[in-house]
Image (tube, rainbow, N blue to C red; front, side, top):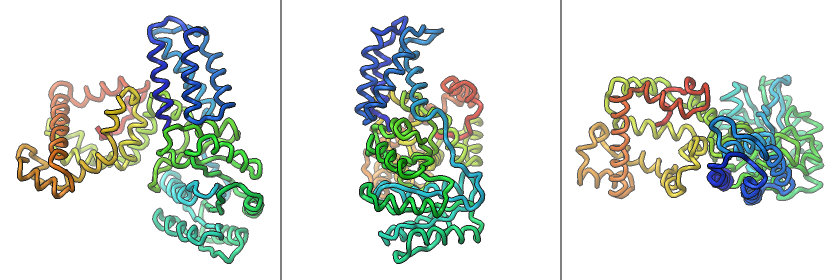
Length: 461
C-alpha cells in the first residue's frame, strides 16, 4: 500500500539534501512531486489541492533545527499533515453500549463485506474478548447466508440462521432477541449489497437501521476503487448515519488513494483496514502509523504489537538463551523464524512496517516475498533432522532428494543453504563480539525514542 507515494517522497528528500533553509523556490519542485504522487495514488483532486497548500504554508520559511536537513523538516510537515488528513487518532468501536451491541454492516456487492464480518468477529473475540453472534439479512443471495455460516464456524462466532423467504427487518429483530437470550456481547448484521447505489437498496437499509438502532453503522468499501470509494461512502452517509468506514483489499492496493480521501470527503473515520484474505487479516486504522508508513518510516509500534500477540514466548526465550550461550544457529531455528514470520502476517506485511524499507531497491525487495518464504520452508521440511542440524553433510544426492521432496530445483536448495550460511556467520559474530546485549543496543538505536525496551524476545530476525 502507498508504494508509489513512498517512492516519490523518497526522491523528494534526496533532491532537498544539502540545502540550509526551506523556501518557496526549493520546495516548489518538491511539492509538485508530492502533488503528482497523490494524484497518481488516485486521491481526490480537492483533497490534493488542500493538502499541498497546507504543506506549503507549514513548510516555507521553516528553519532547519539541530541536525535536521531540509528534506527531513519537510517530511515531518508532510507526515503531520497526512496524519491530520486521515483523522489524527485511531477511532475505536464504541463497545460501551448495553449488550447485545448491534453493528450494522453496509456496502456494495463485491466489497468484501461478508468476509470482513468474519474478520471483525475474530478481532472482537481475540482482542476484546467479546462473545459475537452474526446474522445475514441478504435474502437475495442464498450463497451469502451460507458463506457467512461457514465463516462464522471458522472463526468460532455464533450464527443466527436466516432464510430467503423472510424479510430483512424480521430477520434482524429476531436475531437481536436471540442474541439477548444467548448473552452475546455483539451482534454483527450483514446486509444485502448491490452492484451500484439504488433507491430500493437505500430504503431497505434505512428500515434495517431504524429497526435495529445499531451502535455502529460501518461502511465496507474496496480500497482499490480509489477516490470512488470515498464518493460511494459519502452517498451512503447521506442516507445513513455512518459511524465509520472499513477499507478492504488494502494489501492489493499500491496507491492508497481511498485511505487519504475518505475522511476528508465523508467526515467519517476509517476504523479498520483489511490487509489480506485470512480471517486474522484486519488491522485497526492508526492515522499516525499509516502516515509513517507512507513516508518510509515504517510502523514499529504495530510490528511490536503483532510480535507480542503472535510470538511463542517460551520458544523465543529458548532461542535467545541459545544464542546467549553461543550455541549454533541451525535450520530448525531458521524454520521456526519463518513460521513466526508467517504468523505475523507474512513477509509482505512485515516489510511494510519496517523503517527505511523504501531505501531498498525494488529488485531486491522483489526477491523477498511470501512465495519464497513458503518455498524455503518446504525445502527445510524435506530435510532429515540430522541435515537440519548439520548442513555440511548436504551434498549431491541429498540435494536431489531434498529438491524432489519439496517440489523445487537443486539451485533453489543451493540458494537456501547459501543464505543460511550467511545468517549463521552473522549470529556467530554477534555471539562472539557483541553478545545479545550488544545486538539489542544496536537495534535500539534504530527505533523511536523509548521503544528499545519494548521489543519482545524472538522477533523474527
